[in-house]
Image 1 (cartoon, rainbow, N blue to C red):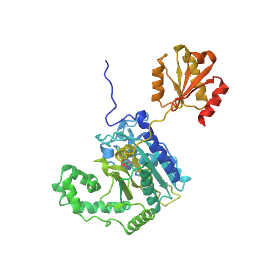
Image 2: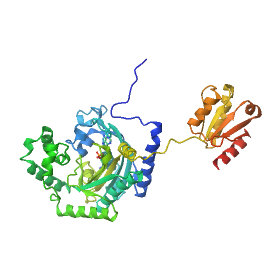
Image 3: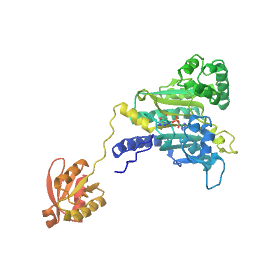
Image 4: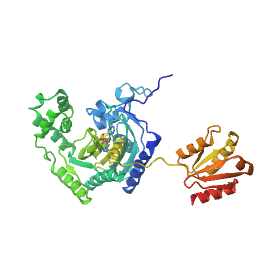
Length: 441
Ligand code: HAM
């Protein structure tokens, strides 16, 4: 026998029995996003590598180690540099900003509230809750009207309310502020200075991060590094007065909405584009990969990717978040929440003999035209019992039977699967319509 091919590592098949849970997440999210004024947007699953290098940062893990390139060189344009290659998108923010700029969305919209639901790809080492192809529900608010601290509070509240509306209770929200781009630079300088004397004694990985992206050390998993970091007095000293006031207003907005949070000065996030507010939502029951959602402000990114408008000298603001759908499902499982079972069908048509199958086939399609969900056995005249078993499996509410008598008299016998009651009815178009009406009542 030929060898079976299995799914690639770090991916998963979503089976029919699992689909209701996915539909539940999507429908719940869409309803809530609409209430907050968000509109759906869909971007390609692959983009130019340079988009991710310029937005997420060349030195970040996502770009450095995890980009899944699909073409090492763009053949059509004859481009020679590696940056012209294409990569599967590791996240949704950079593509949304690329599209926002490309379609000049700021021209008409003072504030664009956009959301997306779809697969993302990162070449990570797979483990529980960490996949190479996973799904995110994300929201991004971009525009000249996206500079208000109350929008930060609204965005965080939206993320929290979405998680709550899924039925997840036991989660924790952490927030922090990195300040403006300038504040961030000051913070990096201060951190390097503070760590200067101890860095030599730490691991090579930690040393590399110190050079490449010193912020990553703040939430390092390396115990020796953590000890050093924990001994530092990190607060809001890196923030300018403006940055401090902004953060105070964000917190005030959250308090007004009754959102519970913890301010964590060690929260930095792994992508370069963040400025000011950053946040992360975790679910303790998930082990090492406990972040179920995260986001923050990325004010400079629109200009950095060639957008912005000279007519409006104010900078364009932007903030967003993304929730990991697989991790949402793991959290729901941990809370013991049962998802709705697969939907059942209304009617199953049984043909008692192979020669009645064509009549059954026609009847099935007549019923479908009336809007009934219906199926039949394509078994070439399997035993009556087998066909009834199949009807049961599909959760059919009624079985319509074509036996010898029914075929002779142009009738159909209808068995109610719940009560066991059975009646025989005329099999004409008019009577079928009437029966369906009665069924729907
Ligand atoms: P992120 O923190 O990289 O942020 O990802 C957001 C969420 O996606 C994580 O909290 C996690 O639930 C899920 N996730 C990430 N990587 C994986 C993986 N390998 N397997 C399973 N789930 C994963 C972003 O992607 C930003 N674009 C969020 C954002 C939007 N910031 C501003 N706007």
